Length: 229
View 1 (cartoon, rainbow, N blue to C red):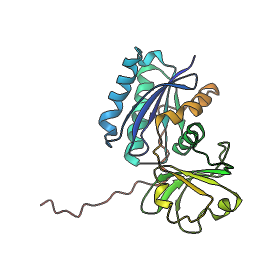
View 2: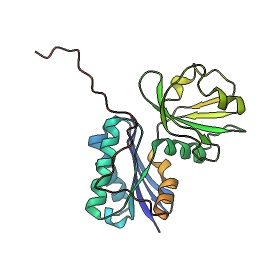
View 3: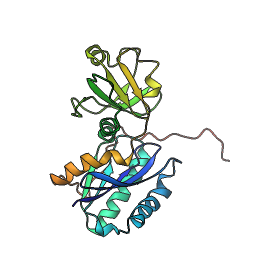
View 4: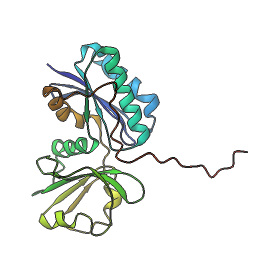
């Protein structure tokens, strides 16, 4: 039996889960944007409730992005620390694929769905996105996209499209089509269970020393307008 710790910190929701042979058996979350202070306690609570130690697990899986720069750094750093300390392999899953599995396993697909388009919120009308088939297969590259009235028109012409993620609802008024369906949820750790098990079975592990989050875009620091002195 493969027992995998799952962590998701790519957006405002911090969540952890435990999967056994690809099935989620425990779940914890915190939506207070306190990833740095809450991730480790959530993992500890999760394992304590199952009467387990980290060394009783077979791997750690992390949502590797794209998403929040700070959230991704917290998640990946914590996952690498667990793996290093317990001698476990590290598995990485993109946050877009996490949303796709939430769509497939949560019953969110509209009737006759042709495509699943995950949307991770970025700045203004920009989202991190990709296109997946209704079966969950990636059909293009993950990219940053500014959404306007013409966005995804080709996909929508083919039939129903599910837009899912914390960036989906802000696009609802811009994408005007009867074939457009929107679900506004954050990626959560339960969506890692199936792809993490696949990566584990196929032994596609990350190099703990050199693995970095999939930021997609460079971090942009801002300068406060407040006068401190």
